[in-house]
Image (cartoon, rainbow, N blue to C red; front, side, top):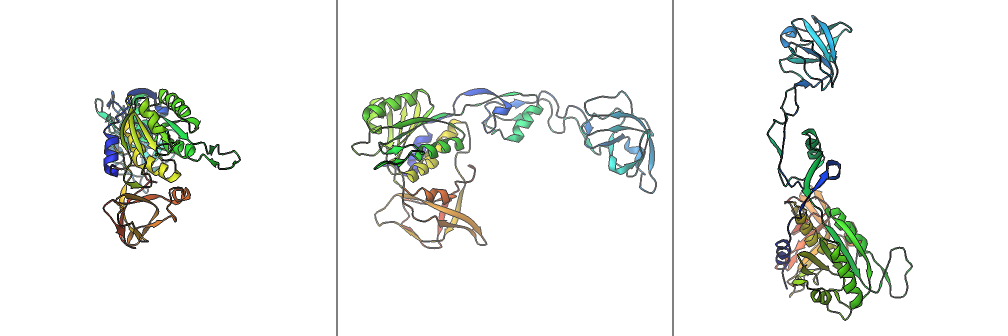
Length: 409
């Protein structure tokens, strides 16, 4: 049975970025750029005003003050989006709007609030230095400059920059479609009344949400009964329409646990079955004709923890992200925690992490059973107690995976 680190490494070495696709800017948020982007022109393409005011020669207003304003003749108006043929000469100015091209002869802009008067003259009440309130051509980006590199994550700022340099389409790594298969005769839909021995299928919804939250697209498969034929039909259907497959339940060794056997009959190559961890020991992983298949345990906490620790990093690698893992922090564990003497598993405790004067403090969310879904609801981190750690005393240090924060490594 693999350790947590060995299982994660075995998964990540078998997945890689998906192919590139062309997407419109407004449909590329959060994607990973698959090409270098170079500016074909300066940004901004011309010197322009950073203020509403008056384009002037700085030398004309060097002595301007509120007590002794400098009077200039206003030759023209220069709104944004138009160009005037008027040249600013000594003793003259052009009324200009923010973003408008700086007229010939001007080398500075006096903000309107530093002036008085209207019509054909203006009284300048403060001096301005050459270049004052002027955005120089190319001060943001020069023509020929690489503005974004392959591997960049497209946030709102990156999309704005792409638009500013003239790109309306961009090549990005495709986001995976992830088939989600839940198995179990006892499962019924969320809105259905319960019959004897039945429970509602929470995992199909939490897993689908985890797939969305990772940036991928979930493909939920209708609930699968615990028969070999039903499992086989569902797996074949799911495999045909996905890039990755997540099964939930049916990976243990019970008489009705068919997923493992059926997958291997269908040609899926087993990589591992079982990880030294709690919760989530019966997790399994296969590669089926190049597609990763994650066999997650059926208990809701085990399922969510395994997705967080293994499936999410793998999906991010498939999307081309360089940063795969949540932030790791050290914290004081408020309560003590002790394993059984022979327990060499890594334990993932659901905790609430909060800042205090002395640093980060983690408090468990209550009972830690693998079926207690509220322990995940209350948590904002997982406290990781390693396989070689027997106990953490009250007030002792523990490693946290900050599950509410974006990846940073």
